[in-house]
Image (cartoon, rainbow, N blue to C red; front, side, top):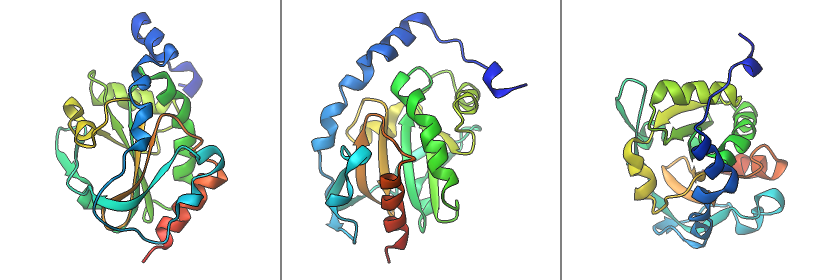
Amino acid sequence: MKRNARRIVLPAAALALGLMGVYGIFAWQGNSRQAVASETGAISRDMAKGPMKRLVIHSKRRDVSDLVLYDGEGNPHRLSEWKGRVLLVNFWATWCFPCRKEMPKIGNLQKAFPKEQFLVIAASEDRKGYKWAKEGLYVLDGDNLLLLMDQGAKALRKLGERGLPTTILVDRQGREFARLIGPAEWDSEEAKAIIRAAIAEK
């Protein structure tokens, strides 16, 4: 079946909320937060420019390798499983309009780098479960991403956030080095430059 023929039927109320951006409103102030922990690497704050100007690059980094997400069979996975790679963890849902808008761009960003160096994790908040979220990724051209579930939004809350989309960038040591609340142009040259810099860090 052709991709554009496969659609998710969203509840009218949920779609209306997404279009109004109601859910995401609570998160826009999250970019003012700073993570705490060890010193940063070579990535500088002046890299957050152009379409990535709302990206907060932390002056200090916090270990987030213990964040837990779940696969389609309900098995837990900690971010520590992917230490050695740069990670982009995007918290999203099929009913979130800004999430739907940015997902194809996140898929494009993954295509620009080998998964052995850079891995995108699509952390779904969908209560309808893994199969529903997987269909959503397919429709949104994000089926090349690693889909995991954030059961009960526990990982998102542990990060101190509640709005979608929320995206964190994690260095190869498992530390969060940047965060962006709301949608972004993730396939922009500015975004790719940040990922390249993170991969190049020792």
